[in-house]
Length: 315
Ligand code: GYE
Image (cartoon, rainbow, N blue to C red; front, side, top):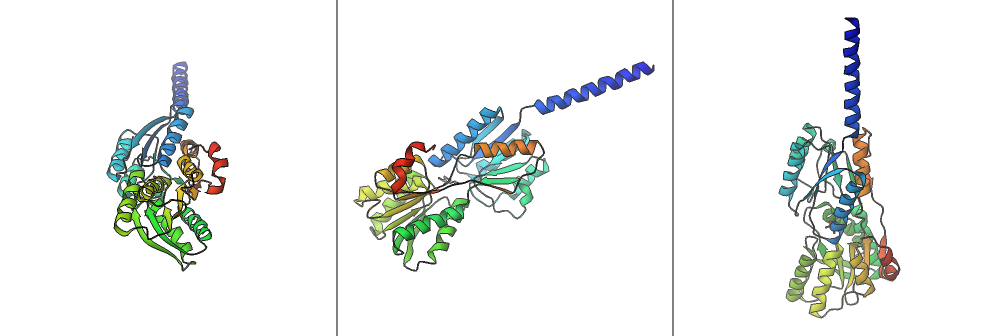
């Protein structure tokens, strides 16, 4: 009788141990919803995340939000329903996330913000934000431009997606520095939604209506700058000479434009965040605590260094 009971206890213990080992070996499942495919920066960011998941044998459920918040919310809800281990997302705009993030919290699914921040009072709704300092990028663009223009310029500002973290913060950083230069004036600000086609469209329409009444362009990303460069050339302006251009991202196409003399400076925003993202995922699954913000290092590249730097650019 006693022997029988001992045997039962033994089997229960073996079973519990086996379950634990299996749980430890179970593949981590991550749901990730991206902003969209609006820029070369974004494509590099997506590629970095997908390839890193493969490398680590993590199951990734990937959704393209097509620059629509409603799509992103729907994807997060489907990740919750599928009981993924961790949700990652890059919020297209900063506001309107409380409800869905609360749903994730209720289901005990940790959330990692990648690239863009949310504007939400309760910061317990996400574990960490992996991303760049967009305010600093705006400041760096402004400092470079002020130096190049010797403190005097009429600036056209091509903004990114309205309500998105990089647009709000790059504008803020840029304006902050402008206060020290009374003769540097932003004569027009308009969104090009971070795309090449809209950058071109906005510049073309403006030139048609008002003509070339500016001598500098601050573009919130390289793709819009490249679109605007095409519009300027079609109008008969020499981009990079008649209009001094600074933009953000430092994609390969920006280096090519600098080598051709059409773009003057790009401030780096590093999209290769896959490694940091999955480091955070694995740390969370292992029960470790993370800092609220995980920064990404980046630099500034003026035209003069473009030829040397282009061959080593990874995106
Ligand atoms: O600068 C732009 C992209 O959120 C930092 O989004 C990102 C921005 C990037 O579309 O090219």
